Length: 206
Image 1 (cartoon, rainbow, N blue to C red):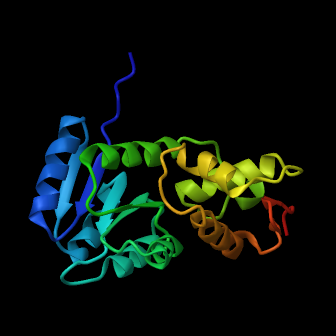
Image 2: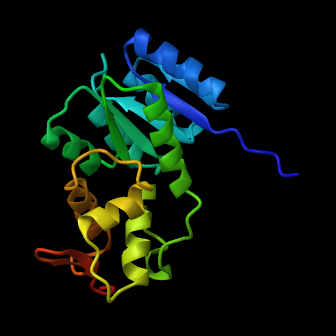
């Protein structure tokens, strides 16, 4: 019988009333949970985590800066925790390399579901060999795999959301545009074609 690997969650938030119940709930579900209230500590602990829950408002370094620094060396999944409900704020987080976001206040059950959804993306098969050297987030990998393996098909935003988030999504459909923008920076602007009024399709490798 294969032993189940225990996943480590790093929860970063300066509010103990959030960290403590998150830690207790996730440990009850079988996760190993590390916590810190400071961004600098998060940077030193990032390589120990399988997934990071990252608050945007931290006392020493902003969550945005923490995310940027982590993305310089790691593709560990990051879920941003934010009280900023504006659509633009959520897009900014995704543009920095976050895989998903959860707005405060949130239920622990919802948070756990989003963690599980992001972690489910990780075992997905590798992207096309041409892009083997590219550093994709788990979400980006799902999108590029779906598009490149069915190059003649036009995917709507809703379809790509279903592909990327396993139907565990309740935000703006335009977040897909942000992930597409990030992918184009990594693999070339012509690889993913916008089909106006419909969605996106694969355009072939540059």
